[in-house]
Length: 331
Image (tube, rainbow, N blue to C red; front, top):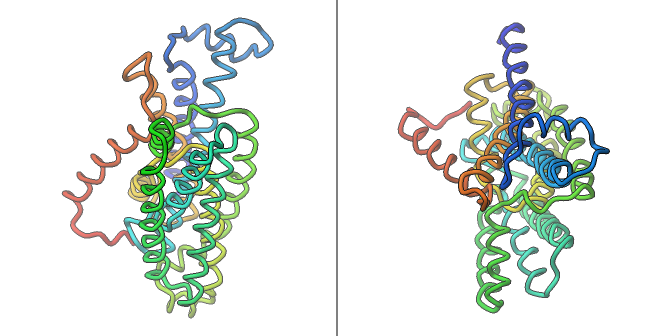
């Protein structure tokens, strides 16, 4: 891709990110005029209920959406390249199942509120550790990573269903809402913690762009090109998995972001991860923020979990992709 076209694409993505930020700041259960929202946005020390709506409810939610969307999309691009599998996504390796089990245990024992993200992250970390241990026994091969993640996901899902069967109805309802994926339960401390995990890790992934490009050629070719595929896979797996764990801990399980965004951006910028990763980061942030804005206004004044919107769009996208695609090889 020539430099002029590349600059044009990234400029457009940045403009779309700014536009989605502005649009999502206006979207919600209560209507705000654009001029009022702009005033309170640039006058944070003012008073009034509109100011509180902007600064305490909508802006934290928009920022969290950007972080989670960027994190999931970047991990999706990395896992699809690392595993050489077009259906790979951040949840392929069982991180979401571990997080769901952690949240279910927390709710079952009556621990909720701000501790839910902690239980979700601990469950994700447990899943990462188990998949890593299994893969290390089989020389970190792609089939082992995928099968290990799938098996653990089924195991964790069974344990979650067991917890459902012995829990109170109101507790089950709370777990199900979290499993749908939601950005409403956010706060400034949560955003700071999630930013600490997600942003530096995305930068680290970018430094491995060349290695990921080489790994898409296969382990044997990577070896001849001087890349220790086993070692690189371990490092990238750990970084991307902890990004996913942080995203899930903050927002629940939001599906399809890490699956459809990298596919779409690969069509636009190509398979070079030096371009694909930052493009996926920007597009993922835009996609999730817009989906969350839609979730807030479709049945206003009620709100839908954002995972419902991404699930519908993801299903439609992949159905059309399946019908149009001549083959599944993305590299």
